[in-house]
Amino acid sequence: MSHSMSNEEEHTTHNQENNTENITTEEQTQETTQEESQVEQKIEKKIYPVSEILYEVAQISTILIVGKLDPDPAERIPAEPFYGYFFTNLAKRVTSQIPTLAVALIQNQMTLCINPNFWKEDLDNFRFKLGGIKHEILHLVFDHVMTSMRWSNKRLFNVAADLVVNQFIPRNQLIDGVVLLESFPELKLLPFESSQYYYNRLMELYQECSICKNGEKDDNVSWQNLQKFLGDGSDSQEKHIYWEDIQKLSEAERQALRNQQKKNMRKIIKGSKLPGNFPNEFREDIENFDVTQKPQLHWKDILKVFASNSSRTYIKNTLKRPSKRYGTSPGIKIAKKQKILVAIDTSGSIDQDQLAKFFEQVYHIWRQGVEVHVAECDTEIGRTYTYKGKLLPNMTGGGGTDFNDPIKYANDKYKPDAMIYFTDGYGDIPYEKPKCKMIWILSNNYAASPEEMANFPGKKMYMPG
Image (cartoon, rainbow, N blue to C red; front, side):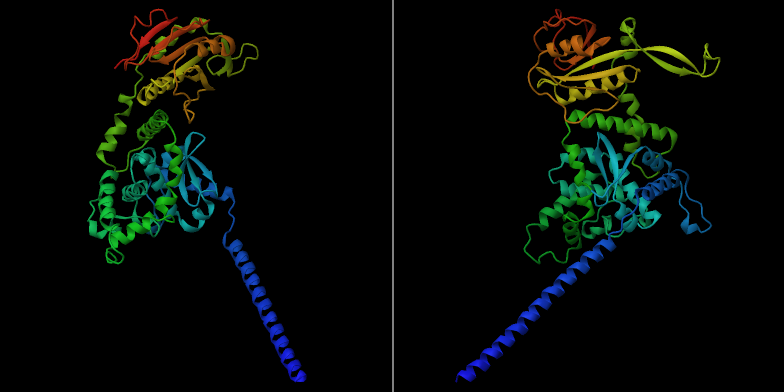
């Protein structure tokens, strides 16, 4: 009996050892498989030099501007200078932090971000690269980036915006799987319509099908494709997520960015024609932009008032005047440069429309060649910075109004040649007295009356219209 038990124990022990060996072998196999998988992933995700990407970007700029000649007609690429000049002037950044090709707001300027692996592997020929660049440019051109926050269903708008821009790109420049009109056959969408039109039609489809029971709309190709395009992994959603930083800006900051972009486009159009398939209303909007954005005040004449107080000088090279000391050209010229403090009332009584108009005028002051230093203020100064033609994001303010802090800042710290204060004028008469010349620029919307401003120091001017 005991002998029999011993045999059974030995048999059980032997089986347990075999099982242990098998488990160990399986774990080792799994570990080996995981290691091999990680190695394969590292091999698959090749690292491309930034210099190589930038070289190809420069080639694309040239091809867009002058075209590509080739003995084979199929390989020829026509010149498209509008896209070329726009792309040349667009800031670019090669980064792996963005999965594809996308426009983002970086350091207060619109920037095309390029993922090196997407650029080299997904956009694996020059035509696809051209199409990808045009796609992002067109989102800027048609103002999709600035206006996306207005739509209640932003994911649906992303698809509608892609429907608009992809119609302006030749089909052989688009990669597989992008949003096209034929992606929604049941809707019978009209070509070259606005994003509003496509958004409304897609919303009708979404509302109709999203409440259907499982399997009820399985034969509806439009609904199947819309679900795919609305998914987290789709290009329509991944590429547009970076527009959210722009949505955090105030309306005034967005308007300033929009105006700057239109100015740039106006310059580009002067040197090149718009693509022939662009909508007429877009052409008229850009062509009339100079008329609508002229300065409301004659800053050249206004700034002459301050000229006698200008105390800063700078040295400037000139070809017209040879050097008296060395007899060489170019010589040097001593010139004066005005130093202006611009105070912007950002209190709660100033709405976004007024702020946009204020900063539009700040831009025109800066264009006169003066040094402009901005102070954003309500009851106190929120921040100060040297203005260089662009707004800084995240404007401060929103509280009450006290005019003393900016005047004290001018007197004790910045010491400008002159001070310009943009405001609606509602606040107590300042007890601080400016040591420099000063002008109050009053908004035309419900601004304080001349009688209410009578005892304020300095000159007063009202913005027209």
